[in-house]
Length: 354
Image (cartoon, rainbow, N blue to C red):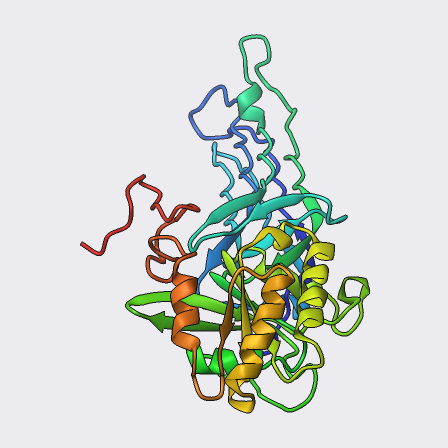
């Protein structure tokens, strides 16, 4: 399945059906009278967040969505049928933006969230509704209100509890494969990861989602490399793991580059808790790892974890630190409920399996 995290689509709700102009003509009815019914309501445009989707690829092949028109009013006081709503399914984590991308109209943050974006037009009045003591044979009617229409952008921000960042070839793909059920491609060249990857991590009875995004290089905010477009997928993360290749040229410079790009991107990414991890310790000795750890701490790192994605060494201590930044329950542990930043379910009580 191809990954697509942005799409522009056109939406139009259904216009209302026109009211009817009709008069009774029946045997043995001396005086007929108006009996034109009202038109039906046009269909709404409804968006709903569903499980099982993690891409907007379907919107590459279909960009125009129009709801049906309401039914026509008819004689004998028959009202037009209301049109069915046009329901569009989107992945959880999708944002609906205005055409100029300046305003977030809807943010789908949990499964089953259902939002009406465009209202269908009201049906027009038939001539029976105009009847009065002074207007016995009205011929006026309404054509029905037109539907609403607009262009919108869909932007997908994957829902993950933990984000994985680092320079290209920092070993992020190997790391996410080692700690989760992900099957990311691993290669000995830069930008092996071209699209974000998600993996579910099980650690000490807890479960959370880890997101791996393509590597960042200096100037990513200006479009260098793959750029920073995928940083949006870690905006919702509670903690970031910054992997640094111990065999790289300068671990301190690697930390500076990535932190600079997070700050340049904005959206408070630079304020998120970050766990610094020296990766590929299987290719270096402990003395070198300790020396680099001291340099990183001197440069501003609170704690440095020595790990190896290839052998699994040091990963347990790093995952223990990750758990300290998670709420009492994550979305995968209680997927059917809304959970706030403190890990409290929407009914106001802390989540419990009992």
